[in-house]
Amino acid sequence: MKLATVTTFVAIASAVITTAAIASPEKGLEIAIEADNRDKGFRNSTAQIKMILMDKYGQSTERAIRNITFEGDNEGDKSLVIFDSPGDVRGTVFLSHTKKADSDDQWLYLPALKRVKRIASSNKAGPFMGSEFSYEDIASQEVEKYTYNYLRDEELNGLDCFVVEYYPVDRKSGYKRQIVWMDKAEYRVHKIDFYDRKDALLKTLTYEDYNQYLHKFWRSNSLVMINHQTGKKTELVFADWKFQTSLTERDFDKSALKRTR
Image (tube, rainbow, N blue to C red; front, top):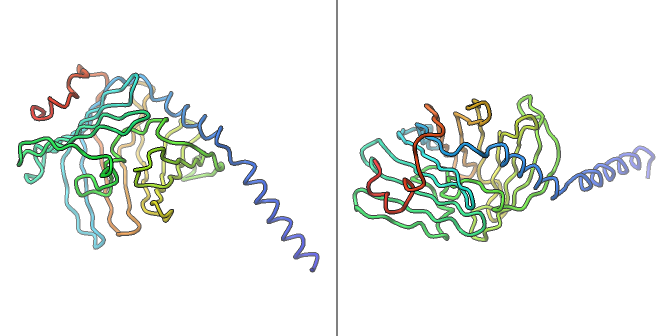
């Protein structure tokens, strides 16, 4: 074996060993906990959303949505998604009670049928209202829902980021793993690669146009989910954020679904 070849082999082997040594479940968990702690205390929030659905040919349709979130204490957050337009989805309401350890409780009120439909755990990987987001994606992402593995540091769009692998604890998750890019300065997520149960790249979610509210809470005003396997894309454009309103936990009861407007 030539000296150059030996040198190259040693360099490659050293790089593999170094990468393996850097990867750390403990550091991955520490990063996830810090990101969660930095967002605690918002109490509740509301926002207007424009949902843009695009097929693989570039044809698009739009929906007007309101999103309302109530911060959980002992359990995860509770959220309402209310569809205001177009007419075929107007009055549809989605309610999610996120659990930290157990499967989430999720319901969908369909005004045409005038009934509330429970979303089964086995259906959480399905598309949310025809979008590239799943029901699983819409729920709040609690720390306890994953195990973690810090992979490396990496620059993304000029930002120094942690790259962390997330493994869903729920066996009914639609994903085998996620790779998350989170900036070191503010612990904001900027990109997520989702891998399906066969470990093939399924979707990529990017977060853009961050703004800070109440001198603490960061929110992205543009979320773009691209499905690499279908060529479809969904963009969520947020506006008119409000925090610490008069909302109470009773506004997120299942019994309030039919009354929500």
